[in-house]
Picture 1 (cartoon, rainbow, N blue to C red):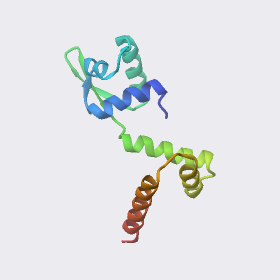
Picture 2 (picture 1 turned 90 degrees about the vertical axis):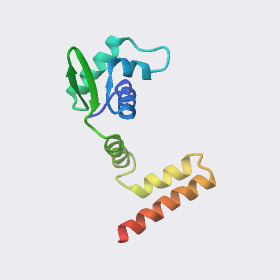
Picture 3 (picture 1 turned 30 degrees about the vertical axis):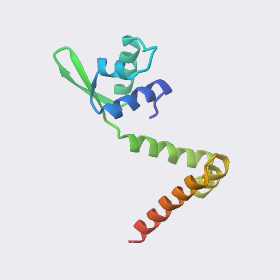
Amino acid sequence: MQLSKAEEQLMKYLWRLEKAFMKDLLDAFPEPKPATTTVATLLKRMKDKGFVAYTLYGKSREYYPLVKKTDYFSKHVNGLIKNFFNDSASQFASFFTSETDLSTSELEELKKIVDQQIQKQKK
């Protein structure tokens, strides 16, 4: 299941806050802030999709994520690789490194990360 752009933006705030009441979520948005009803509708959709849950305190709901940020984005990256790069991580890496404006130091940092992962997997 996937989130819409608006739901994803709200989810990013919830991941950052970890737990939040409606007021906290509204405060996280930049100006102009969305209407409370808009955020409530998004939260209901996200709850129905299994991304968030809440704890009830009287009439107030404290929302929290059910899906980890890393799990969500990992699924998206893997889907991107499968759908656009013939399920080839090396094709994805080739595209990513050649078609983005990465500096030499950023490329060296990526190489370092890959080398560290290789060493981890060899153990």
